[in-house]
Image 1 (cartoon, rainbow, N blue to C red):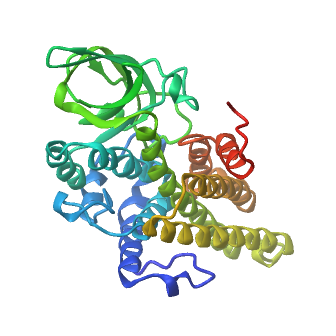
Image 2 (image 1 turned 90 degrees about the vertical axis):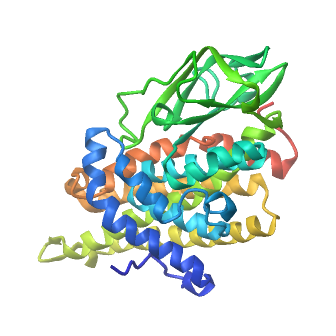
Image 3 (image 1 turned 180 degrees about the vertical axis):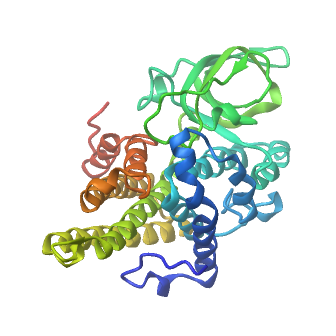
Amino acid sequence: MNYKPVDYYNLDELLTSEEKLVRDTVGNFVDEEVIPIIDKHFMAGTFPEELVEKMASIGVFGVTLPQEYGCAGMNNICYGLAMQELERADSAIRSFASVQSSLVMYPIYKYGSEEQRQKWLPKLAAGTAIGCFGLTEPDYGSNPNDMITNAVKTEGGFLLNGAKMWITNGSVADVCVVWAKFEGKVRGFLVEKGFKGFTAPEMKGKHSLRASVTSELVFQDCEIPEENILNVEGLRGPLSCLTQARYGISWGALGAAMGLYDSSLNYSKSRIQFNKPIASFQLVQQKLVWMLSEITKGQLLCYHLGKMKDSGTMTPQQVSLAKRNNVSIAREIAAVARDIHGANGILDEYPVMRHMANLESVYTYEGTHDIHTLILGADITGIQAFS
């Protein structure tokens, strides 16, 4: 197959051959391996485990990390394009890759010891190990500094107590990057499957991200060896990870929007009403044009954000703007797509309701829309509105 993305402004002209290769490789993988099975898993509420090593084989885990750890060593445009294509299929698939790459492999690489890197990064890159990230708690989401989960020193290690919630991959993870208070400061710990005092029950009953494993993490005198602590103190540790993930989400949301646009355009050309395709109606054309305009603006925003990230000039607030904007427009595009598809928009023959439901979670996680608004407001005014 030869995948053709939505590209009204000829973004191809700005991409390197390597960046195009990544986009097209992941795009073809999505068309051939993910889209044919994703509705079945969404309806059943199951994660397609068979995709993990296939995704690893095309290099989507730890795209930007060094090759010496089994990673691709590519730039951030490549990473963004890979996330775009995965979410064109389903937010759950991109979420899996985002967590594996940005929230697990990144902190192990950035804040871990060389022994931790050698132990985990090659296995995570190869998909033979799965990771998760534990920050959010049942009572503390947007204000992680008030987390209750805590660690105390013991002879030879730590005892961890507390709970985390809304954890992607939690029940299937081999290693969890868990953030807890230790001596009054937020610290990161690597909690491994099978550690005494650690359980990860799966959360059921979701209407969104149904093809994703979402879990609680429960620590009851969980024993952590001394060598499993990360070398970072304070919220800058977890927040730096969230910046990486939010960057990928900015691209991923565009993928969902592109999938919705493609479905809407094709449907409008084939759906006949009043003896002609509904694509011939002015109101339908207006909706399609609005979709394409928002996607195109989002693509250019992400491309320049990626260039700034590669040059080291990107700020977390600029990532907030991209995440806030692109998820919001993808969510609106989902509603317009449902309108264009009419009654057929609720059927699993089309991706519309699945993307719509998934985007409700993406709109909230990794910083809610309102929190990103306040982050930007504080940045441009110099005044914290939420302190």
